[in-house]
Image (cartoon, rainbow, N blue to C red; front, top):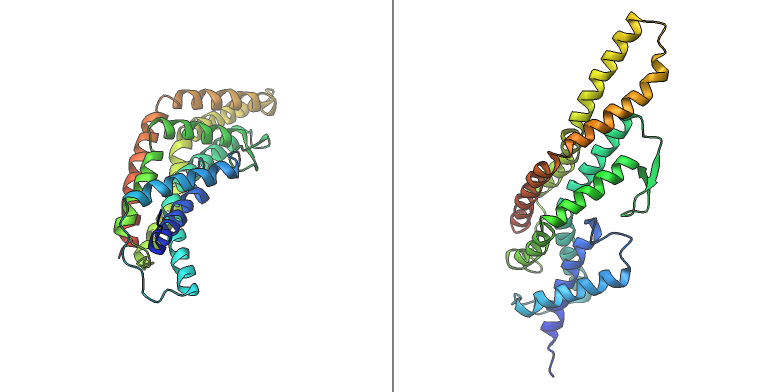
Length: 257
């Protein structure tokens, strides 16, 4: 069996780019997944890509520094693709934090299984629910398809970081807050009306201890509002996943400029 240097370099570049999505994506890069499994999955995915990928000719004089520079570019491409999915799940987690703060459950923390950090209970709930729907919609296949599409659109040593790409990544950061407010908006609206009702009751009947009945009432109303919002959550998640597909195509197009 003869293995040429060009084949090894091609596999190395593909492996580096594929490994970039394991940095940000919450399911591939979860700390609960053993490192050996992530490495094996990355190598297997890269091997399948390398079988059908015809790489562009590498520079004739490929020094160690130029090789490291090219590998760094490949890692940035993979991380940029994975960051689009990270922004979506960060928005879901932010929505849980907003809802938990408004309900009054922000002081109850739980260990997030994806990051092993302490987060609010509703943040972990929103994260796991969104991840379940994300996998049910087969949206994780789009990340693999994005890596395969980027191999043709952005060959090694051709990555370009321009102002348009920075603006796009900044918009993904802003999208975290947009998604958070959109998902938590029904719960926040209902709790604001509950606070107004409690305020009117407290002004009209001062003998009623609002602080005593306010906290359990807000928890009951907030949890009920979240339960009713679950009916619309799959449709909202489908829209966010569709936007993710567009964001992945836009990032690949901007990296190729």
